[in-house]
Length: 345
Image 1 (cartoon, rainbow, N blue to C red):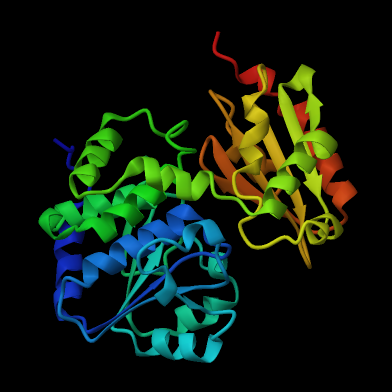
Image 2 (image 1 turned 180 degrees about the vertical axis):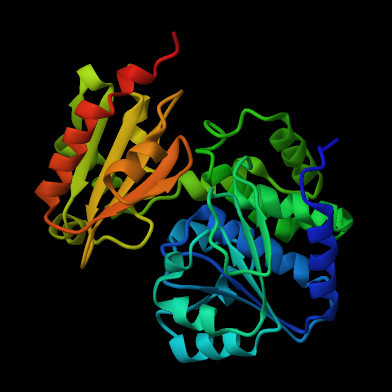
C-alpha cells in the first residue's frame, strides 16, 4: 500500500480545479526528457477521462525520437514551431499545469506566455526550491520523478481505476528514464508498488525499455562510440570523468534532439568513477549535465560552479563563455569539491 504523501488540502483544491475547468493546458521544460513527456502525457490521458472541451500538451521545443512512440505524443504542440497557436492555447486555458520544472526560466521563450496567463496554475514537480508562480504547488523532491508524483496524485484524487494502459505506459516511461532504468533515486519500496500497479494496467515493461534504450539511429550509435573512444577524459585520482562536444562535432554526427540523452551516465560504468560531466556547446551558452553515484552531491557542484542545481545524483548547469573556460572551471572545481571527500567512512 502506498504511503500518503500528498497534501490533502491541496488535493481537494486541485479536484475543484479539474471539475470546474473546461480548457486545460499542460506545459513542461525546454529540451523535454522522458520524465517531462511521460508525466505530461500521463496527466493528459487522465484528464481525458473527464468530459472537457480542450486538453493540450505544449513543450518549448522538440523532444527525442525515442519518446515519440508514446500514446498521445503526436498531439503534443511544439511551441518553437507553432508559437502563435500555443500562446493562444495558454491564454485561453482555465487550468495550466506546470510539470517537471520549478523555475519559470526552464520553459525558455514560452515563459512570457505562461506568466501572462490568467489560468489557475498548478505546479507538479520533484525539483527542490520551487519558485512561487503557481496557485497550487505540489513539490516533492523526495519523489524519484514527476511521473511518480502524477501517479500518486491520481490515486490521492481517488481515481486510480481511471488509469488505463496509455496513461500507465507514459507514467512508467517517465519513472524509468528519470532513474536511469531504476539504477538511482529508486531505493524506495513505493516505486515498485507503483510499477506493480502499472503492470496490472497491461503495460509491457520489457518493450518500453527496448523502445527507449535499444532503438537508436545509426548516427546516434556512432556518436556514442566517438564520445567513448575520442572524447572521454578520466580523472582517476578524483574518481571523475568528463567529455565535451562542440557544435561542429554534433553537426558532424547529424545531431537531433535527444541523441545525447543518457550519455552522461556512461562513464559511471567504469569501476571507481562516481562523478560524470557532459559539457555541450549550444548557440549562446554551454550546457552541462552532471551525474553521480553514492554520496557525492553533484547538485551542490552544479550550484557552486555552474549556476545550476537539481538532485543529489542528477543535476545540470550552464556557463556563458568559451568551452575551454567551462572545462577549466570544472577541473578547478574538482580540486575544491573532490569526490574522495564524500566517501562514507
